[in-house]
Image (cartoon, rainbow, N blue to C red):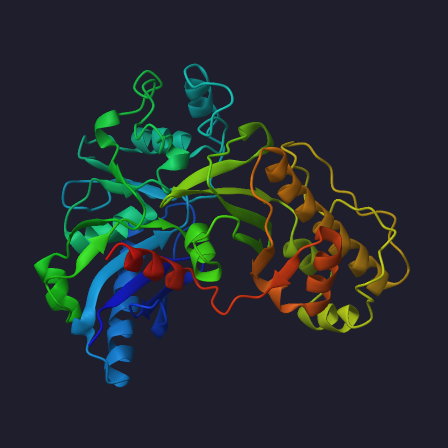
Length: 425
């Protein structure tokens, strides 16, 4: 019988898992919630407890389907990019965790700015490296041994050892996947460089599962734990083939675009950067516009009913920049960019049409910015997120962008990480 790959996704609302076969087809899935968490004092140990519940649920689901969990040969984990914690040698947290969306690290940003090139991905008050400096200030006893990103932490728990990360999670913390090195100026900026993990390509094998974990979950002691990736990259891999020019737009609360390129393209001045992914570079950026603006004005039923009143082949005359608060990341990097949602017509359907079309124009600007930097032109854009289920919006986007829009069969990040590690079998 074929061997299986288990992918574990630590999303913002809970943990999901997927088991795929050697062809990448989904065999089984499971999920578990995080449970109560103090947002002002995030406990990374609760990440692990939720992941362990999800793995247990996954094993039960496999057995219920008459599939032997012993067929699992490899495990990989993806997590929210930039979420991190400091641990001791036994992989126990010695600080609270800081999440991907935490910011306000002004003093840390100033320390980094004195030494980092300008522009650089580690600069700014929301920087992942600034987050590491803040974690260092929390740790007083001197017990910290490892900086672990969220995916690293779960993988370390499975292996019984820390000290490893992947090229995708490490990117925003300052790791350069092209030179395969941490910044030479990091120590001067105050980084305790001995805490930084060893970095390996996303999806590559690291070490066997710890015997106690294999017994705990009822799986083979020969299972290999692989380097992980970020949740957004795992979602890309669930949606699109690993071929140059493949493109995915995530239309969730915000708008994120990713495009697979043969060359590295970094433009921090407009919020564009590249992750290493196999022989390619995954070029991407994220806008603050997206479905969250639509949901601010209309509920789910209203969005469905109003969409039915829109002719997607007719252009809206309204020129908006739909944001809930000032500030944009990509394709314009401007922390003070003001929302533009006027004039508002008397017709709610016309208002929704204007917002949908304006978001589509921003999406088109994102891909145009990539093309201007010699990225390939996508022939198909796969769409994930809640916006993918709205056929009217998809038709508007096809007209505005001039590209075929498709909804993929799979969009779950857990499927993407499972397929990625399967490529490294």
